[in-house]
Length: 216
Image (spheres, rainbow, N blue to C red):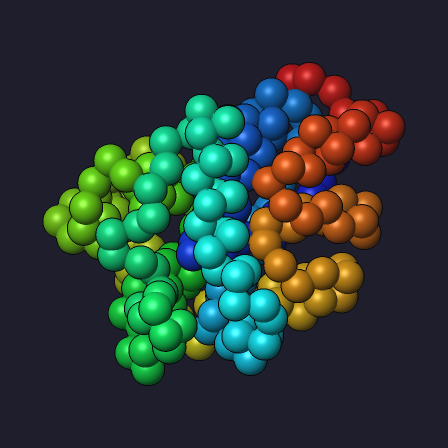
């Protein structure tokens, strides 16, 4: 029996990047379907929460994400450009956001074509691995989409023609994440149970094995 789960994911989250490839490998190795549920980063959807906590939080995330990647052997560098246009010194969020809305809509469109997890993995590697500067330029995104089995031009057509519907899907993902009992990403929800963080993957697999997870 195929098990099913939802992965709540943001293209701006370093921890989402550190998790998505490993969840993709799990779905390839086991009789498991993981649906990608794209959400906007909290810097966009609820900046009041982002800025109400301890100011050390941002510095800690920078340190912890880098060392987590090093421990896992995953290439990592803070993106150039950042998917969210933000002054990291003042934490001010720019009114114009040319990247994150497009990325999020593309991810939603990819999931509707059955390749959401693959698309998120390939694009996250492009953004976060440090292999390229200007991931948003040239044919970098087109190459990532192709590696996921998709055509970027078709996805961009969806974004242009159906942005309202895609945004409604993303908003529904926000609501589903809240209903599952969490607010952050990456969160995988299985059988109604949320597992938050890139360090919960082994626990997810353990729980799924209790429900009959089998290798392909």
